[in-house]
Amino acid sequence: MKKLSILLALALTMALGVTACGGSKPGEKKADGTQTSRLDEVKKRGVLVAGVKDATPPFGFVDDSKQLVGFEIDLLKNIADKLGVKLELKPVTSSTRIPMLTQGSVDIVCATMTHKREREGQIDFTITYFMDGQSLLVKKGSPIKNVKDLTGKKVGTAKGSTSEKNVMAANPQAQVLSFEDYPPAFLALKQGKVVAVTTDSSILVGLKNKDENPGDWEIVGGTFTEEPYGMGVPQNDSKFRNFVNGALIDMWRSGEYAKIYEKWMGPKTKYSIPLTWKMDIWP
Ligand code: GLU
Image (cartoon, rainbow, N blue to C red; front, side, top):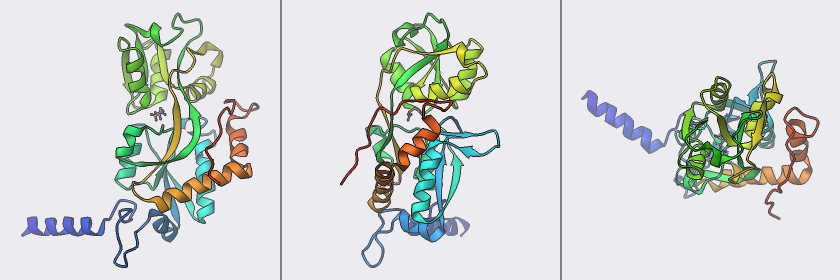
């Protein structure tokens, strides 16, 4: 009997498509034939729940006043404002961000995530909002000058990242150590446990320039991959995805994007990264 009621409860939950965000599954047909969208749920709830990085300056990090801030957080704030809702932030890592989105504990993920076609099997992506490539962070003066020099050497990166796979492909003889996040990989570099940290170059700029002695570290080897960042959104929900794409395009056109970029990565900032790409904007 108990088993039966558990099964019934499970069936009911599945039928209602209830997720941890309290929403229904996107793309599901309602009785009147229209489809449910996360966009309507977010508006009804009055809150956009977003997965963000919390230790990755300048994208998402905790500042001196203990606030979760950064470039990606300001993009999300703009989207939440356009929706007329509040923004709630949930920290994610490279390995938790996709499961958190598919399980419905966040509505959107904006967390240094590369739009990889292999990830499209689980989630959908918005248009590109940032462009990067993978590089290496080493101790200043290190004999490691590029990815080929990692043969037989230990290199640190984060679990669940493209960086992990890319470095293995670029040099199958490198020994890749995957950490929960990039700061522990950087700590391993400081402790001499790895000879380099590898990930997107702008994340490496963040690690280097947040350090007490940025001059002790060097970013080497140029970039050996392309990493277009997209926000992760639930699959098969074009109403929601179109809204976010529209918001990004509007930000680019109005100059709001440039303002946010300037604030976090402009030449006067600690994490100065030149803006060298253009958003793919639709008329
Ligand atoms: N952009 C890469 C990725 O999506 C590396 C950075 C990260 O781990 O977030 O995996």
